[in-house]
Length: 315
Length: 299
Image 1: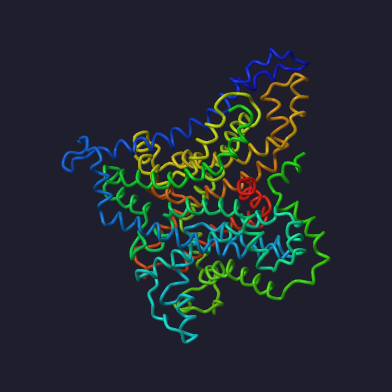
Image 2: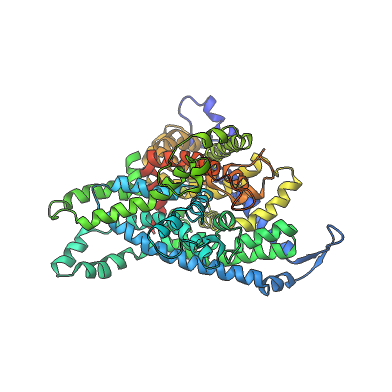
């Protein structure tokens, strides 16, 4: 940066084009490289290292002694009940939470779109769950579902409904449900904001035309709003799916993965805590990475046109 | 000029206001059902945080009841966490890490974004695709190998050891948002400066950066929120309170079993660390929404 900015000190009058010190391409290389170097060190290198570690076996008795294992670690992971359980839980969690977030987010977006008076206020309100730390979200919902003094238990008991004695986070099924619920609370508003932005770029004439043609409210929603909202829905779904597949904070704080809430990221972390980044743990990390990358490939394909447009003319 | 750039990223805020004004007269007045739905949304979004505040104000016997309003509200929990050295250290760490990440991300990211938006060179598509794909990397796949690398070069359990990986996750967003902002700024302004003898770099920091201020503010807010919130790397790459940030500190504050938890103090600490983010939301709602939706609307 110092070398680039140096001409500033001496420049006073007009300069010739050739006197600008750096060619455009050299300047571009200088400006781009800090970002790329950081990304290479912190993203590319660790992934490559994890792949290498996952292909080796390590001696339990002699630290540092290792030998080539090929895909044995992957076989071990793919046939381990714990890992397969985590895989199932992660997919179940992702499916349930993303589906509920879409339905709830769409409902919230439609309401916010209709409520033109308080829209700024509503946007601020729905940003609150989004802004609250995931760790705090988990602590909050653990409080609310606390069997002794939580809000849910007390509410159910005072209404005379069953469930007043349920230890929510202590039961399979319920524990996952609480996790889904906490995630929906935190991220449905994010979904709503994305969809609201999508709703707002639909021109009013389209609705007016449909109205003139005698379309009912439901028909307008079904035939006009939904098709035109499809791109926004797709982006929101992909964003959320990628996040949900990587879920770690919520199960870590809510249950530490007990009672059927162990996820892929949490299982890889547990392996890492117990055995370091040796063979099996590394294989689990890499598998998580591969699963997420397959989904994100869809994402890249979808925003690919966007990237091309941003990259501009030369490609 | 800056407002032109802002409205591009935020068609939601500027575009619709005028449109809604135009649409308002023919309506027959708002549906009462809508008020109910809006009320439900407000309760849904705010009640859990209210509950957290509620618990944080309870002490002693009140803590084992589910009263909606603390029977005898007390700030004792807040008093106790502000006397807790580990918590104070974590707060300090979080402030340092989040502000440093925000600043560095803006500087480094704006360089990269400017080159991508304005300069002529090969491989732009590849660079953007590589940068954006990093946002999808699962933290765990990076955390464990990074732990090994950081231990080898003595960055484990240091603030720098957190700042560097955070940058990797915040740079893509910074670059993505800033490229679109820089592209909205008319080229003629820079060209005039170049003709007057400025270098490309001078054109960048004297003309483009000031005009892209709204975009810079948006990315700064989102970056700060990311860094303040990050948990997985924070617990993997630190081992003691000397480098732990608030989410990590609070998770270890939690105690071993559900029944031993200092519920009141944890709730108070949770409220305290949420306050900076809630303030950001209250002050910069429009900027945040613009940043969050910039990718979605254009797609």
